[in-house]
Image (cartoon, rainbow, N blue to C red; front, side, top):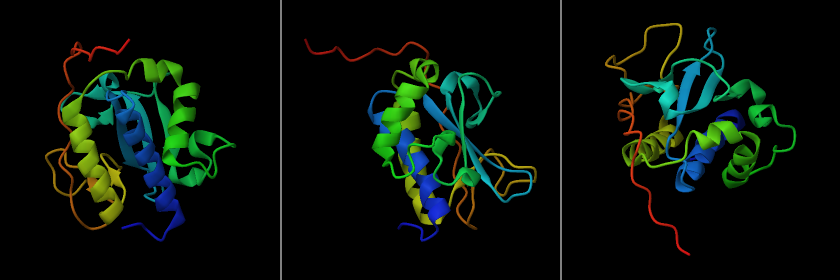
Length: 173
């Protein structure tokens, strides 16, 4: 179900962009979603898995050069870009690869457990609202669960970080 709220649809487009990047082989790319202190804005860091906390891969360790940030207050200026207002998730993914090469190089590889979790989370976000892993108030559910902007459900935290060295598929000649 698509939200009728254009702000939520744009934020879902960012989540869908990450899904597109996972399909392109950047499965170590994670989101660290949160709420602003006022609770009025949703924020989403896009970060390589090694910069997330091992017990909850939806919480980043810190802001760094390996982080891209989008927030609901940016509307359709994704990541503060001025040339992507009408882009699809796939078009945003292409620009993301071009504009964040350091972040992308840190995110290449497999993490099937996370990508499976992400696919389920994306469906829940489309149905119930934007997920967030941390805010300036106590979250519902405990145990590291992500909350949604709606009342239900709480989303289990993502799988632990995959091993650093996973085998790669051979490339065709």
